[in-house]
Image (cartoon, rainbow over all chains, first blue to last red):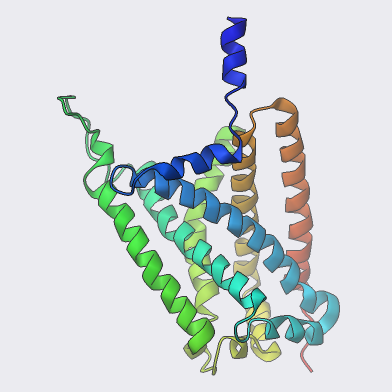
Length: 155
Length: 115
């Protein structure tokens, strides 16, 4: 019993445990890829929100002059505007995939109904519109992120 | 307690879909007839935007901070299942929430007048 418990405790993979799932192919396990992407974009956004809330408060801390200096960093292509663009990509993916998760997990839609497990068995939740919705999320993400890039850098 | 946190995580997620869409759309140049992204953030436009939408911004601040910090907290705790690590992450999450709330409230309620 003690040995079995030790084995469980030694299975703590840490952050790399998530990345190991990236080996899954898009055809066989898009859910896993969406799961990893949701986590990565979530963590990017957590950092972005902290930076955004703090930097926006510059107008209350240092007046409008400080604010205008900060805002000029978003003009043109520079490290800050590129970081902002990456954060926007994270926001868009996390939002679109979040809508899918709300529909599937909270409202239990798009995941099909339970059926008798006849071989070769594929769970209803891993096929049908639930899986198609992941491809839609990725397609919309690319289109929306490109549109944001146009507004940020080419407008 | 954990059940309520999960429920609030989903509720804030649903709320944020609309609030972030509104927040991002305000940076779309045609909304103000602005010439580019930076031009949508002039002091005059931003002052009117903040003072005219304090309730929505408060809601956005709370929902974003709760959803973001609680989500990051969950991921970090899951990475290393350890009681001391969990306590450390919980305390860090609480402090981050309080500190960022302070800066957010500062922006919403102490926006200086323009000119």
